[in-house]
Length: 284
Image (cartoon, rainbow, N blue to C red):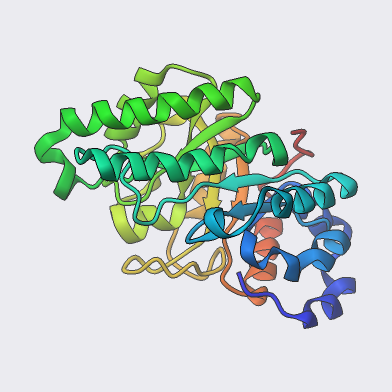
């Protein structure tokens, strides 16, 4: 997310009671290597980050670097989530060297749980039907072994792994995976933008099949052809229908906004206000 210094000029506008309440119920995606740019934002606007760990972050920053930012959040009384790396990773690979490299990077992420004490860790199964369906059992068994290792860590630290949909075209793999893991610390993260851009189907295909595991939402919009990360309401996703379904079924998942710009962040917050997603303060 790109946020400039002009953000602070918006303070009187966005910090009315309704938007302040909404901000307190959300996380906002922020990559760790840019987190220092947002220290003032975090303090003044009470932004709770979903800390991205993609790329070289887990190799170039030290434990002390991570601990410094964790102290800032603790001092401000703010919670966070972590977004585990996923690009280039293959947690179910048949190639043992690729599999071990993927697990090594994920281990570096899960070592940060004791530092940040995140509410959740968002992870990707990275299942692609066009590749993995031809050796599904091998992929599933290797992937299951990978995530059981990290599920143990999550359970020991009282946090939750949220498995996010990316290139999966149906809920079948997530459902099979979550049924097999059978743990309250393994749940589902519904990414609204990925449903349209990659799965190219509707949220009704994923809920109710994964309703019992729904623990988190990644909210952004697009027009159905690319993962544009538009603000809520700027694309074609049915947020009105989804939010009505959540309320009807008394579902209160964690919410992460994934804007690409400062303007998009405030537009999404205003959209959540209009759509009245939050009826009460969420306690983490």
